[in-house]
Image 1 (cartoon, rainbow, N blue to C red):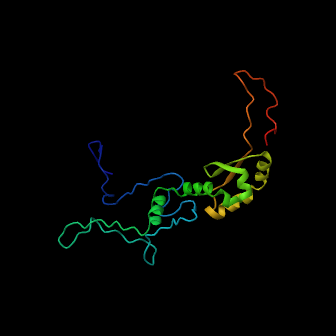
Image 2: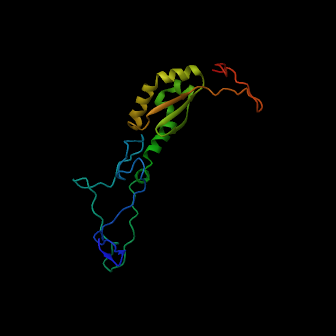
Image 3: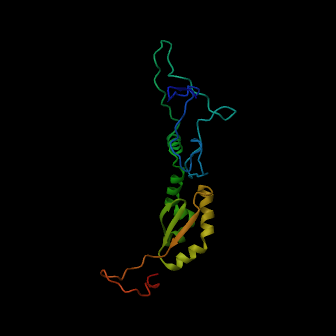
Length: 194
């Protein structure tokens, strides 16, 4: 790089190359056209609809705006094949595939684990690929801990591997018998409510 009177001159060797800023730098900082971690949402196609040709590459866009025969700019084509394609494109571009998969798991919990288990369990939240589940009795919490691998396998078949990695199973919330600011440490609540 050349210097002139102690001042750095700009590097003009990269002039003309476009640098496209990425929207996310986190977990899915790969290509924007693919689901980064293999996450998939049943019922929603997240495949790239713009791929054409035998090589699998999209055609290079023309420079500038297209013009008609008289030299005036043509109106922008706002053609959308379907609403699902438009939503899928936005989900891919904004890197929301994992969050959509989390929402699908929360909304379809009964179809994933069955009606009997879903009757006694609720999904509280999904954070970082870990599902937090509360059960209405401690017996169901213990049983669900034993069935953890079966539930994870069923979830991975629907939304993809490594999207949901762990289950945190909690028993029922116990009533607090503490009244006032002072408290003597005791044995704590036993399994009275479950």
